[in-house]
Amino acid sequence: QVQLVESGGGLVQPGGSLTLSCAASGFTLDRYAIGWFRQAPGKEREGVSCISSTYGRTAYANSVKGRFTISRDNAKNTVFLLMNSLKPEDSATYYCAARDYSGPSCPANYDYWGQGTQVTVSS
Image 1 (cartoon, rainbow, N blue to C red):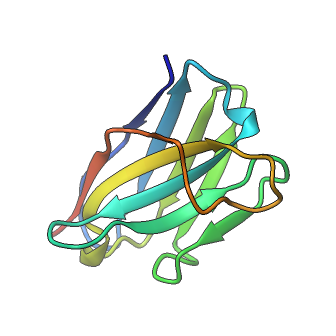
Image 2: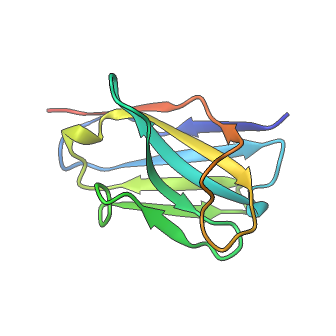
């Protein structure tokens, strides 16, 4: 059974840091492109970051560029999202998604989604 499980969310003060994890089971991540998305109440889901499978190329939304870092550990079948200098506007439910995709960059669509982990940035 293909499954993605996010963890690492929580409450953090502005300026703080969190590291989200996306653990895969039922498949090996090394062939998959992984994306992180977020959705705040009343807002549309937005792409935050992604990492390709073949070359490990990364991409970031302008709103998080320079603050967030995506990485993958294929041996652990896990992708991480390190979030620094967090702002209240980063508060949202964060989802990871996967697609079996060997292209050089990230795909536009994803096949598998996790259940999400809540991030709240507040003093």
